[in-house]
Image (cartoon, rainbow over all chains, first blue to last red; front, top):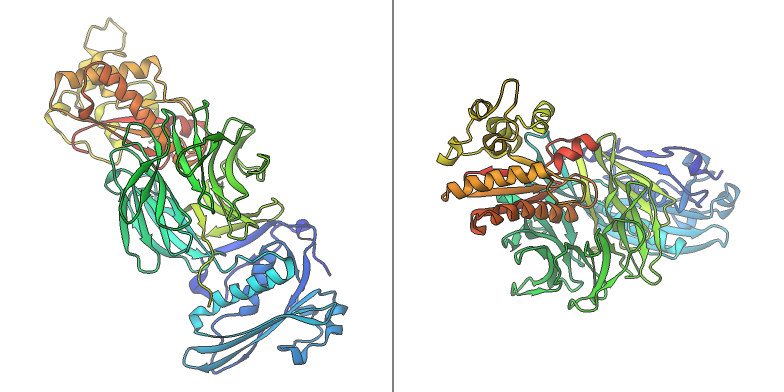
Length: 434
Length: 172
């Protein structure tokens, strides 16, 4: 009954047949673990006047499978279809070797109001692990499904889930003569993309504030780099830096009051801090080499950055006031583009190995470098807020695509968008719960 | 564009063709007329024996609006230096003209590091010009990193074209 994901290339293709408005991408699991926790997600019952706005069980199951930590038992094997604890017969689930069981129901209460109920059971112990009831609008249903998947993931693995999060990325459409750059925000599974900025000049380096409400990015409008901060909900944006030379690589301080960024106003790229309220600048690096790509530790104490002061790009760490610079990477000739894990214990980065640019993790406690991927042009890695997955960009058949990989490198999901070159993904922190 | 690229590498690209490479139209200012689309014919006539080419002549060098670089390097080879110097002499002779040096990188490595690398390349062309007497305030250095490739391919042929500095006259 357990499916061996590794044996089936592209084991699951989740196409949004039922919701064509969102049919912009497919997710292919191209690599999986030997076996995950066998879970049965029973389609939720529906009580209402029209078709349900969302198949919640399908979203939950897709999230769990995509994490690589679970094997979904196909509904055709189910011996019964319970929708609440009163209907569950644990024997039916032990027989088909389910270890976890998810059941639930959706009831239409009124105009665009739905009551959604979900329960999670440990089949062997015959006990309930979680039970939640919500009242939501139709448009919140997908978010709710991700939130339920987060609960299930945490109860069963011990780690918080990160399904109810978002990703920001840049899409490039058109050819060499006229290329349009779009900054977009979508759900963590790539659904529901919304364009928050369009430009005929390049956009790069989106970075989420710790509260997940604002994005800092680089825009080349007026044909030079400038740093902006945009409120994701309202679309309101503020120019933060447009000094002479480079204005780039924004990284938020954990308290959301400052950005670390790169300016070359004094002659060559140096890392600065800028206070968003007062616009006060503080220079952190003093070196004739390239200093760039700052990332702020979650406790606010350190900044990891890239410098080629040793000859080629390598990672360094300094205190957030610029003191105590220490080199972190020594293996290989190219280590750059670091992004902190949310627990502050490691960074993910781009590392050159055998001529290819690959995604790696550097453990900050012992400085061990672990390369996770084996392609040629992997870049822009960022951790999911639970540290379990890393989202990055790569090139496939001449096109930019996004990939989510588990932080142990064993699970790989390819996010296939229908059009354009997709690049520079940034995984959001946790947002507001329903 | 590939055809243009071939011309460029053998140094016969005229101003008109070079201007097609960027997405910014070069303005036909007074200074540009001196290196206009008739540059090639003028260059061939200058001090060249039978069967020779005007390669390396001042006008030819000036007609070239791009210099290229090795991977992760901002060093100018002798030919690129000669191109930069020819533009510098032109700027010294025409003190009212400003120049924009637009640095670019290939797609390998991180985008932000490449943005810095593009600037460093522009800087190294600017330094050649400053050494010959062009004041820094007449030189506008800009970097686009890997964001504006000339060639969209994913191999060395495209990469070597994309590691470049564009020398642009007129209003930027």
